Amino acid sequence: MAAAPPPAVPGGLIGTLPLGIYTCELPGDAGGPIRVAADEFDFTVVHGSSYRSGGDRGSYLLTGDLVTMTSGKLNGLKLHRISSGFLRRVEPDGTDGALRCVLGTPGNG
Image (tube, rainbow, N blue to C red):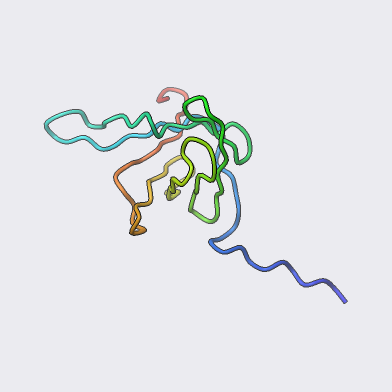
């Protein structure tokens, strides 16, 4: 008799984010800058599910499209993965917030 497959993981498949520097910002307005840096949320994915922020190392869990920082400086921060290199902060009510984090690529980061 074959063993039963493991139960599904709540929230979707477990994965990892692409390696690199994620720069976070808030939108600006028509009368000022188009974006406002939110450096305190910047992080670098360094290996698998590990990140660095402000000199501290931490870990995150990606299930489906939800990234949860599980340790380190950003512990408790939740981000919605919109696309491979674009994340939005999840507000306490579950909606996408204004804070966005974008994976830097050659030429823009």
